[in-house]
Image (spheres, rainbow, N blue to C red):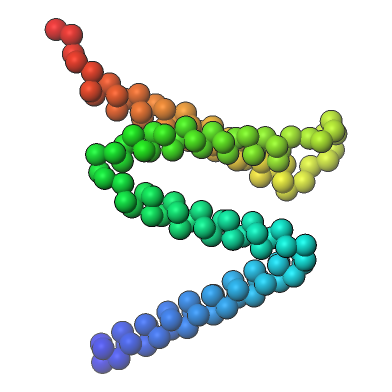
Length: 135
């Protein structure tokens, strides 16, 4: 009885994942057709490659180097602010022109700023642990 219910749950999860994958593929295909100039496909390919490279870089780092890697990652995330400022910044000064790109750009600036500030605070505390104490 328990084995049958477990198998039913696994099959339902498998069906849900299959349906989700099909819907995701359909959405990507529809978006690619809407952007027929090929820019979406090239950007999506770069995004997928970045996911794989990031995954393998992070998981192949030795534990001793993990903390310095995280502090450098926080510094690199300041690049996000540049892109967010470009998205949020006006082409011309017009306060009435508010679109989703500007809203998401502003949110990205705020979140990246919090990430950078917090990362540097953690790095500072981490480096203080290695300083010799004056007696």
